[in-house]
Amino acid sequence: MFYILITVISFIAGSITGLIGASGVMVIVPGLVMLGCSTFDAIGCSLFADALASLVVAWTYSKYGNLNLRQGWLIALGSVLGAQLGSFISPHLPEMGVGGSFGILLLVSAAMFWRKGSKKAAIKPEGRATSNDEVKGFLKVLRDNPKTSGTILGVLVGIISGILGAGGGVMILLILVFVMGYKVHEGVGTSTLIMAFTAASGALGHAFTGNLPMDIAVPSAIGTVIGGRLTAGFANKTNEAVLGKIVGIIFAVLGALMIFGVGR
Image 1 (cartoon, rainbow, N blue to C red):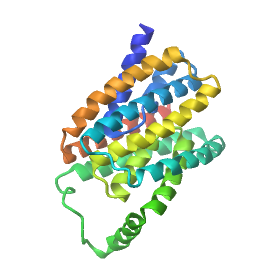
Image 2: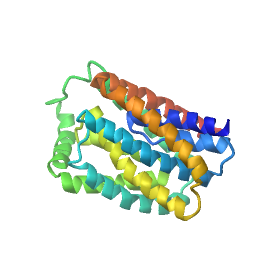
Image 3: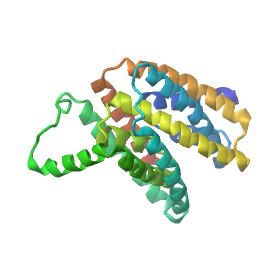
Image 4: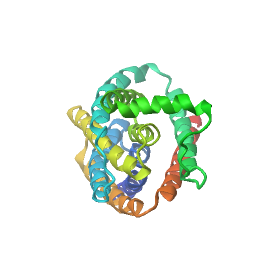
């Protein structure tokens, strides 16, 4: 029964990864801890499962042409470096403040994706009022200099991810869609591939410290891979507007749960 519960929890986590490119850490870690695992073992197993599921999800998105690495590999490199800085900073920050901040980030992200998926927001926001001109100019600079912007933004993502302990996929997706101008499908596919490398790096670190029990990691990976593969296929057959709203709803639920959990 224990291993069945692990697989079910991981299936839910993988399903979320397949739909929105978010890390399963937010689901698997609390689930495994509730089942009696240590926090460090739970994180190690979650990262192991994340790495495998993200590869499968990214492969699925690539089959539909929704994988764009023109900046993805630079963001991946920068995020790995930035994560080391974030991990160093994290112990010096108040835990409740960090968790609450990530919950708020998810709620803001939810509103942004819901708006993007709405009929009105689907109209291209080109050539608007002068208050948007500076923002558009800044975004144009970033998009015209993909190597520099990709590396810098990757480092920032890594720092934030290292501080929060999760959320790299969320941050990467936000940057790809709202800063770099990727479509939602393309953003999810690319962010999951990037997340696969960062998760694998983290899983190796936990393996070296003895916090990767394979009897738990394997069923965790099986559940996430199956869930991710199924929902990734569904997501790629869903139109852009609907997927944007789905992403917004899931972010809103995760954000509310995280804030609620932090406040308990």
